[in-house]
Image (cartoon, rainbow, N blue to C red; front, side, top):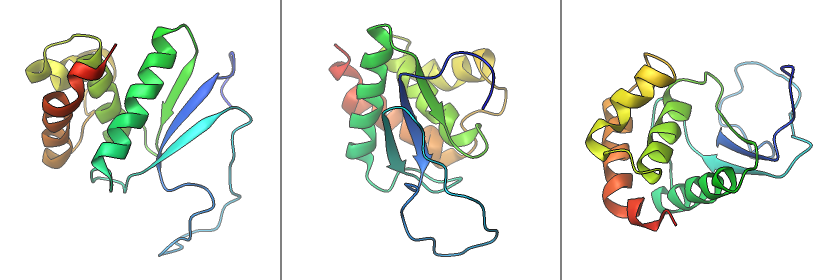
Length: 134
């Protein structure tokens, strides 16, 4: 665990810890947070398997953060999927949708939102879910 306060809520991007693995490349202990958490089924370098469920989870995490809770968003690498969620949260915060990826890269990580599909998913999110931010 990194130093600092623990999150009040976690939004984790990948498979839930108890989900069966299709391909086991390495064995490692299953990690489960000690705080409330939600998991979005989201393969690496891809987009969420269920876009509407993912959008709802992103909105819930955003609203918790707006209410003052510490919300952690994470995936294995912390670049593509995490950056995509940050870009979506920027849209919810009122940032122009057409500029959310650039803003995320400038303020989070230069390679955030790694794939063309993830960039398209941010645009889809903005078109379908941005108005639900309050």
